[in-house]
Image (cartoon, rainbow, N blue to C red; front, side):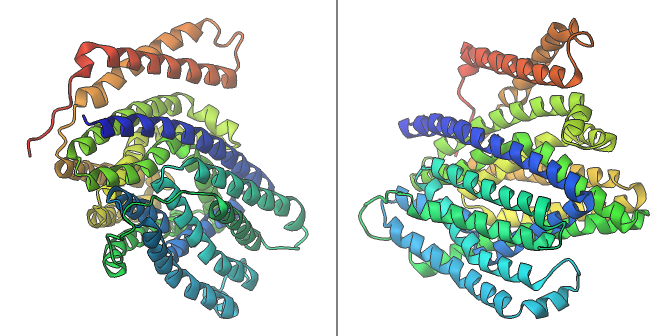
Length: 508
């Protein structure tokens, strides 16, 4: 392995660990905010906010030009080529603003017409105007975050996300407690205002933060026309994924209505699913999200340097870490799903769903990592086709199973699409990178250490269970002890001579 690859591997792991600490804190407070909103406004109102958030994310993707992915990738490639990164950043900003500013102008000039077109009493002209103003702000914020990732200044976006969350949560909480009950502001106007203020403040922070540009040869290696040709597949991939995700979100309450639920029941179950169940399942995945974000610039640099061996070894390593972590998450949710659901303010139904959806966790986390690999090596075209097939399966199962089995049809749709999508995604990554994975290291070893850690922890705490420890304290102690023991055993196995054998690579 080259010196650059070793540095990349160690540096990326340390950076991901620090970013994960930031993200875990934000995710935890986000869960608490969802619990607060659910208790104050009801699950149906939270379901409405979730639907609005889904369509707002779709609008940001269509009008933002996938600024984060584009900036982190193309600036990293320009850094590897010793080119003019300042000009590339201006190219990307020009492209993003050419999409977001016209969209914002339309929303500002014709809010009343858009409200009549949507024809929903919860959506007003004020909310439309606020969302319009926020579109260019969101695009600029995404580009600034991508620039920081390209220069490995990833702590700045972490601080910016903290600023964004604190302001957004404060506005939503204040409006929920004092303004919405009096009718001073609508729920969706409060949501739009919180997004504008949160993202605007975070964007200003990143704009004034000093991110050093590499001098290089001061000759840009890419023209705007060539950049545009490479940006369009990235944008189409992001738009397709966001469109399919929004369609899926909109179909959930509709199919629950077909099962026989009332409108309030459908929105309430959807709100509980999106506010408690999905955030809880995705809560541990902040580690993978941080790693995936770092993979894009890391693999882009390795590809620009022609270091194919570094790409293979980085991919192998992150897969090992992801599978080991996801198996631990499966164990915790399978054993303590009811405790987690109750802690987050859900009922017995939420706890039951968390236990039943635990086996899906490895597929969710692996998808996050594999998508980071695909973006890093520039395979957005395949990613778009795979997402199309994956969401076709997901929506088809949703339309068939939810009207027949109710909420459990949603679980079936998640499982089906993740099995199909990740099998194809993994095959393509292995074939493209030339990696022949060591399944002993990826799957067998973490499963073995987790089994030992599980049984040892259960035996250690068995004496105290039901006597000195309540359910919540037992859950906390079990998670900490089992996690540390599992990590310790993995470290020991990594130090064994047999574990240091090089990963087998398919000959070129």
